[in-house]
Image 1: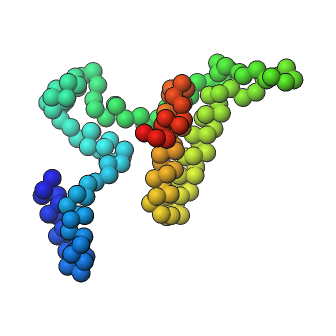
Image 2 (image 1 turned 45 degrees about the horizontal axis):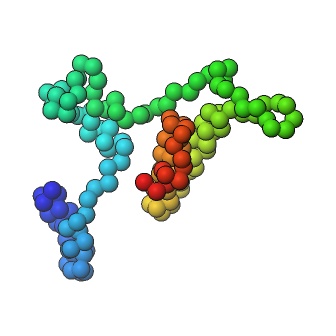
Image 3 (image 1 turned 30 degrees about the vertical axis):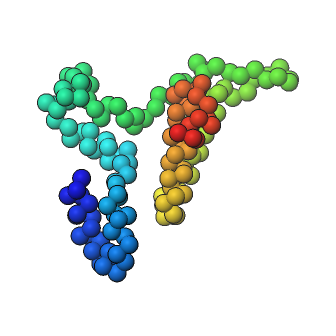
Length: 148
């Protein structure tokens, strides 16, 4: 870790020279691990090191712990939601949640293409994670996910 901090300080040498107050802040700097970076790291773990993680490389690999896609049940087997008024049925909860995931995904893609502030991208990313978590576990309340 200390080597990484020293490398970071040398890369940002001019900034530190002009503003010495940056040095203490950079000493606690850490890298945010994006899921794509973690996936790359997990794929590069050798089989012999998987056993240290208590993972049998024949049965599964660490990269299998990261979801790259989600299962979508076909429309005919999704449960429909009965309407209180009228007597018809509405879109099922799974279809609504899948549509929300798609909408957030499109918003994230647009945010990435326009190059807005990092905070906007991170908010969209976090909201996408909340939507997918609620799809996987429908009993998970949204307020809990927003806090954690």
